[in-house]
Length: 369
Image (cartoon, rainbow, N blue to C red; front, top):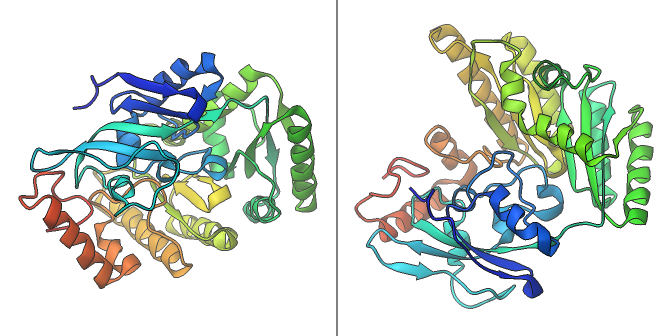
């Protein structure tokens, strides 16, 4: 339990990095940094701990602009299975010295070592932020707009896809009053002039795909309400079927395959007779779906599990991955060999045995020994 390890060890404002203990949460860190004009941008929604975010290779809504934890962790301190303590790297922005132990542990889900301290990259708080919502006539039009936005090099900070089912959930849970149609939530960071120019370019692309009118959230409190609604998507989804359980899942595909993957998934949901809202960090090809079900009904559980199985295999067939940010844990172990191949899985098991020969660190997660 790292939750009491709350020290912010050192802020190096001039180098744009910070050293924190594993139990510091994302919001606590940003509150500490705000007066220095700095921020840590990785935002998985929940007020997650930095150590947990590193262990799960978290990302979230800002990943399209700022990357994931993989891109923002410079070094780690970790306790290994034999009780030894290691420091994986230094504060240098790049290194070619030895194996990349930092990225070996980032995303290892606690199976190779226990992360106790993290050195992170920081960013300056942008001068201007503009956010808004744009409705579309179809899920394909929204996806195609997101694809074109990325392909034309517009440096959008966030671009989130919500299908009409998810929007209905937002309206029920967060009282947004939005038209129940597919939408993109977007945000731009930069100078006033830069934000204005890029948002206008995005508006033109959206209009070309039948999107609009674009509704800007110009006040900070309006932006906060918008993104709070997005981060509360889990609860918004559950509002669509009160009392039901949910098996939330995600996949990620190359961005050129995004529209096809989402469209096929929508058709599969309808054919399966499920309520399963879709929300996605579509700037990097990642989307989530949240099937609602009665866990005491074996037939319904089987339908949902069949849907998730088809979703994963669809993503893999399109050159994607079984999980963009939810992690492998136990439920997706069965897809790893299909995604990586037997040789790569053998290497993973070799690494696990070498670092944790007694299998005491999160046994049963990621690889089966």
